[in-house]
Amino acid sequence: MPRSTAPHAWRGFTLIELLVVIAIIAILIGLLLPAVQKVREAAARSKCQNNLKQMALALHNANDTNNRLPPMAGTYGGAYYAPLLFHLLPGIEQGNVYNMATISGYIIPMWQTPGPTAGSFLRQTAIPTYKCPSDPTLGVNPATDWLPGDASYAGNFQVFGNRANPTSSAPADWDGRANLTATLTDGTSNTVVFAEKLAVCAGSKGAGNGASDVGGTWWMRGVYNASTFSGSAPGTNDSFPGDRLSAVFGGGKGSDGTLWYTGVAAMFQVQPQNPTSTASQCDRGNASGFHSGVLCVGLADGSVRGVRTSIDPSVWWGALTPSGGEVPAGDW
Image (cartoon, rainbow, N blue to C red):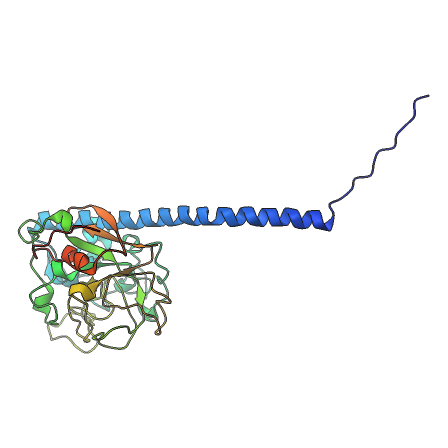
């Protein structure tokens, strides 16, 4: 008769085998993680550049409609005493937010202008186009009464302000009355109009930062502190035409003494360590971003690009000045 065989009992993994499997899995995860992070960063950078693209196109629409560019802060196109990023709202499909600042038929945004929900202020409105997904400082500014109205982009004072008086805090000097064709003689493809600027930049690096309070970027910073406009001179709590939290780089002086740097000192920063710490080297006087090795910018011709950190500071400054006679070359 055939010999019967009993089934073998299943033998489990030994401890050494389990450790080997776990080690292999850990190695695979370690190899895969950088690739995943690169894909995520590429997606975030693409989104960031798309935001800048929308802002640049809105700028063209504003210029075509009003035959001039909006000011860094001031009266323009039907809106009174407003900052640059407020003037761009209709061009980025935020006309409803723009119209919320209407008072007696006039559009005058102020600190205490009511927001879209009960108990909120217009300055606390989140504008998705003004937020870069790579900005780790969004939503963490100590000035919490403005959240979530923070932003990751700023305007170039050399284009939108009076570049002849870049250290004046007078409201008149925050309006350069520029035009895309008449003013930008260096060429629209050679002139930066917008760049990344971290929502929080708390360090005190450099001289001339003005007030010691935390700096950063808020899209509606640069308005009067009131619920109704009286026409009086700016008070101590007003941010008009600008202060340490205004969306500015490349020049200008805030009402609180904050200076945004000019010349080679205006060189941007990328990935400053601990930007929300007062011990950080992040400087509110410059443009700043958090992509790896590049700063995303929007150019006056409507294009966007990533400017490498290796760029010569003088070349960067040449790209900020609209009519300085410089033609960016080399590492531009």
